Length: 96
Image (cartoon, rainbow, N blue to C red; front, side, top):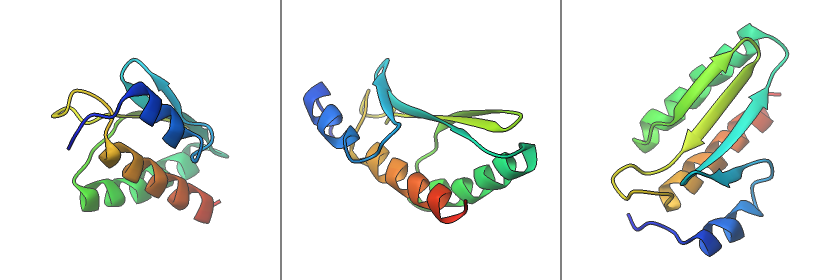
């Protein structure tokens, strides 16, 4: 998988609101109603990550989940990251 340029990344970010490009990765923080909802969403997302064989750097504090994506093998952000980011958005949107 080929690393995307900054311009390519910024063009793709227009289509997934709330995601930012910083420090060679794309990231977003999601806020849920409570810890249970946040953890349930992480579980749903984890199944998608496994299906795509692409695993985020993420953290959970109470009702927030922070997700950061990059493709370690490529040394930056690739289409693989945007595929997972879009899938995450779909999961979160459908389950709210």
